[in-house]
Length: 435
Image 1 (tube, one colour):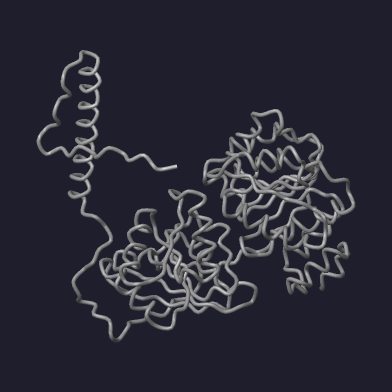
Image 2: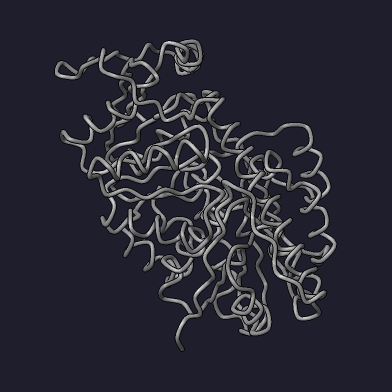
């Protein structure tokens, strides 16, 4: 089937042609026709299946020719990066139309988002928490809303957004078309779907239990304390770019510092970074400023890099679904890619679970010129050292608070300020910036 058979508006067909899209994916073939008829949808589809266009194209088709100035579409999504990616995809698809869109998420100023509400952009794409912040104000009334999309519903459940979603539903009209997408359908999500949908068309695109055939996969057994050194060695070879997944935010930070010391252009993206930092990191990786982007799973949604050559699992994911999702960042749109997994002896059990699910044993690779007996360079800070650092920091905070309180008391009495305890370093006065 070609996109022309879906009978979309000619402006959208031009946009699809500009993007090089000729044939719809299975989820698009199944979802677009009933959505064009105004039916509610309950669709099970994974990230990377083309579901974004599956829900955007019918809404864009319906909005072409409609009066501007009223927000008629709302897309709920779990992460900032995914919201930004959906708006970018919408802009590409609607390039030959007058339709406007705006993203609404935390970590950035609210003023431009307030302007989007007040001006009535056609479609708002937002995360639950920030949307609720705006809904407290009278300008954020969506009485003209006609289309509601819930994207990656199960991920929002994992992130604890289910109560927020129910609160958002109180702010949108009950008479609307709802498109509901989720990779899995656990009971709480199924119950939410029953609450939101009216006689929906159910679409179940088979979830991939294995990565795409264009992805070459390999496992590199290595002691945990030598993983960072092995990664530097691999990056010194033919790898031009790599998206590297770590288990925690702190490991992402420490790995990034290790790679910087090795002369690798690297940035990181995780939940502790500001939105400006995350946007800059992702933009720099896409543009080639950084060869390596270190990320955690929670921040990986919305990372869609055209032509990404390599994905590296620095830490073995705990679940097979996470493995498929991670390595699926490469080899997209029928392209080819490579996925490496660094496996320590203590992670072999998790790897075997993944291999059982994907139905194959992944090849093991040993790097000939790498010293597997080298001095360990663990990224983990020893437990005793972490505790000592926490105690030292808390002691300094308490001492600083004591000195400040005594200084205020002395100032009120007109006496001299107390001296800090021995071993406590008084912070230098903050310099005023020149105007």
